[in-house]
Amino acid sequence: MNIAKIFSDLSVFLQTGGDVLLVLLIISVLFWTLMVEKLLYIKMNYRKTSKGLRRFWKAHEDSDSWANVQLKTAQVSQFNIVLNSNMSTMRVLIALFPLLGLLGTITGMVNVFDSMSSLGTNAKAMASGISMATIPTMAGMLLAVLGLFAYSQADAMTKKEIRKLKDKILKDSDA
Image 1 (cartoon, helix red, strand yellow):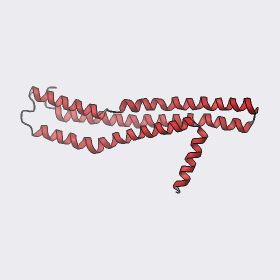
Image 2 (cartoon, helix red, strand yellow):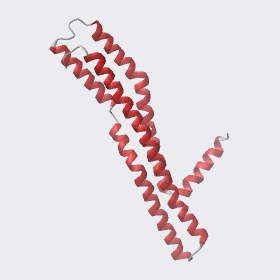
Image 3 (tube, helix red, strand yellow):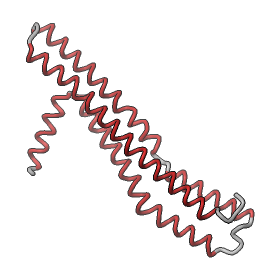
Image 4 (cartoon, helix red, strand yellow):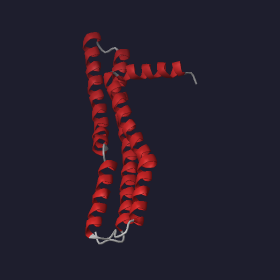
């Protein structure tokens, strides 16, 4: 596949959809960067750190004292905070996708009405405005659906990891 052709096609697609499509592209790159960062953190860094913490408490004497149980609970809470970082940002970005798509619809329809007022009922001018209206809407909805799916998977994985950590560290204590 030719890289130059891919970028050329992407450029044509972005021009067809208008400025809103470029904004959608930028926000989707931000969203997917956050998503990949979250998954890589869970797979690479978090699991090693949590295993080390579990080994520490397994080898620790008197790990069921009240003070140690409180320390374990605090450590699990810190892991929970780290694992849930950027999740609210991702939810906001998912909510922005369809809204920006609708903004693209509005700007595209304004272009249609503008071309109709200046050129009359020129079908070619109307068609370009209608495609400018529908492409960002389609892209926004597609990004929202894919984003919701990826977010729900990451959220489930995060909750599962915290549940496993709580069970492994706090299972023998009263907390």
